Image (cartoon, rainbow, N blue to C red; front, side, top):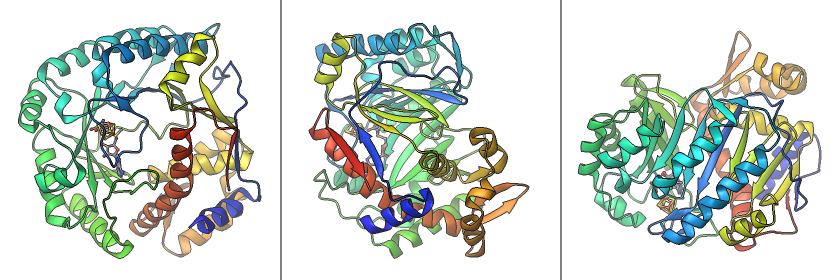
Length: 417
Ligand SMILES: C[S@@+](CC[C@H](N)C(=O)[O-])C[C@H]1O[C@@H](n2cnc3c(N)ncnc32)[C@H](O)[C@@H]1O
Ligand code: SF4
């Protein structure tokens, strides 16, 4: 597996040099001149821990969370000190279960909006058991415009496999009718043992007829550093199931707006990842700017310790080579299905076709891409292979990085070859 990602990386970055993350870091982040900036805030607490979930989280305790929130505000203050107010596209809260901090989120939003002007709204991830009328009203009052609920499945047999209890879907449906948001997204996991297309079709319809206007259907990934005990599907079965889902959504007029997401009316969107640049706050949060990528420590304790000494909680930093930055950019652009040559030119001041003309030509020839008016778009075949390739990337890169970071607060270095 490692060979596939290494070979692709060397070929596309035209270098044998891997992604070399170092534990040196700077206490200032140069974001002022960055275009298309987004914000992300991580709240790493959950009422109980799901065995399949790779994200940075720990069991919730009120005191620990409140202490964490104090230092989250401190991190925001350190990053923004001395900077003039800057326009950003969006702010997303992820986790963990950020709703557990509901009484402190307003403070975080106030602090961020005094340094950033948010133009496309505020999003938050929710666990189904969070979704009550009272909570939704509080979210709406503090300015949240998009919510994304981690349903995973509406069916007991799959919730059982995932170990997801306490969902309270009826209360959730009821609350969604009472308080409205621009985007109500629901997350599902597919390719769970013995799951059929009919199971998924039912889930999609339950979602769209009970308040959702956007869905994400993630393939189940068995992260090696966890012991989920859940078996993944084989490639062929997964491809067949994915094709049935996409055909079904297309027939029903749902718009595919990224590899994994569909929108009911073509307008709703929810994506915390597809920003060209972003500033991340909180344990495990990543920041991606024109020239660097950095990741905060996964340890809540060490996160607090660093901030107590007025230092940023950065664990690892990668100084991008230009080609690495291009690959990172293209990876996320293709995730949203399209790459526009003009946008690439604006971002890098270089011509995409001059740099990757040959690769794009072959991708078109083998039916992965179409091109119209300088915009490359993934075909259904291309999207499947992206999906498939993304799995290798997840195993070799994310699994390796998150596995290390969840054990060591400040690794000396991390090389991803
Ligand atoms: C941070 S998580 C969940 C948000 C919320 N805490 C919850 O549990 O509902 C974001 C989404 O990632 C997806 N996810 C988590 N672990 C996964 C895995 N092992 N494979 C595929 N998708 C996964 C789930 O659909 C989940 O809703
Ligand atoms: S899936 Fe959600 S609730 Fe479960 S551990 Fe992950 S973040 Fe927490």
